[in-house]
Image 1 (tube, helix red, strand yellow):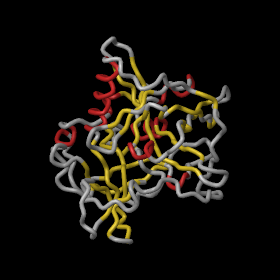
Image 2 (image 1 turned 90 degrees about the horizontal axis):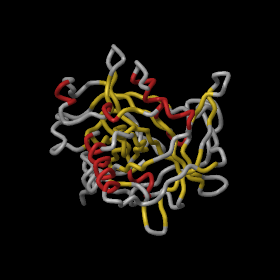
Image 3 (image 1 turned 180 degrees about the horizontal axis):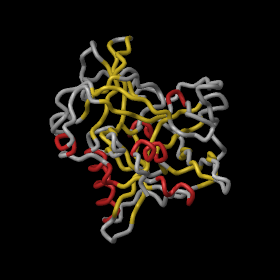
Length: 297
């Protein structure tokens, strides 16, 4: 069920993905939940994130930070583990050229109403239909440095101006820039636009920050939502061919530490670069140039 306010709907659908490394550190990323219609008419829920979030988490399981309401209406943080890899390889489905991954998940009963419809993902006509252009405000949700907005585990909402022109077509411009600081823990979070009427759409997925040498440029790189749609299609075709990587299951998990801006933070480097300091064009395409780089979050 979709909230009338797309911002609130996305807050509810966005979850923390984390993996403990030791007693003092954990790796953190962000993901969001989408319902995908299958050919037989049933729905399948997938967790969408940046592919490097899963790639850089070495253990076979990660924690997903569900939130449910108790009988009194209070929100409770209730994480569980999902399998992301087996001895045979990744359990997620990845876009062949973009930093996007999806993985089927079983959502706990109390969190299922938070899952968003696939129709909320922008397609190649959305930016033109909504007259999206440079200077428009976009918002993103995530867990910077593993911080949550509160002890219930909801994500932190941030906003920035669209800093690229043009942004379409996606075949020519697969990524675009937004004017905000992307920090470790934000990777995989949805980037979206909302209208005064409360409607809107998911424009893309935050994947990295832009740096010039050692200087952060306060810019985030966003992969267009069309590539989320394409990755979902990869998953559906593989499933139809019987190529499901693993029978995913939800397992009880020890609660992840909930750190909020008002409380202590953990000593953690939540996400590490894709490959050291990966040199990249703002579009996300790798280059050997030493003047600009984009570091995965």
